[in-house]
Length: 99
Image 1 (cartoon, rainbow, N blue to C red):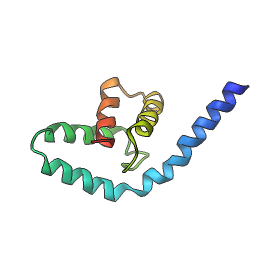
Image 2: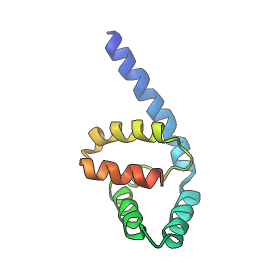
Image 3: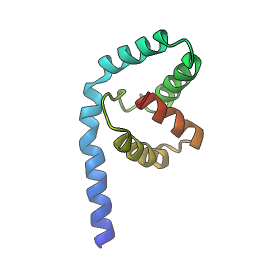
């Protein structure tokens, strides 16, 4: 019973974060595009990371901006299970969220 309560509490935290994620779409996409254009090294990697995010996450979420890596890591680990992400996709999305 306690495990279920902790699970539901954790799930509620993630669900409560979704509106904040969706409000930052335009700003983040612009920032990611500017970052990809301004860096000559890693441009291919950042484009790949953005493409992975678009393919897996953008169906339900907008790109976040300003989350600490610890929170992003927690969200991605949760969503890896929910969205059946591979380990490589998980790393790519984490890099996209925290350049």
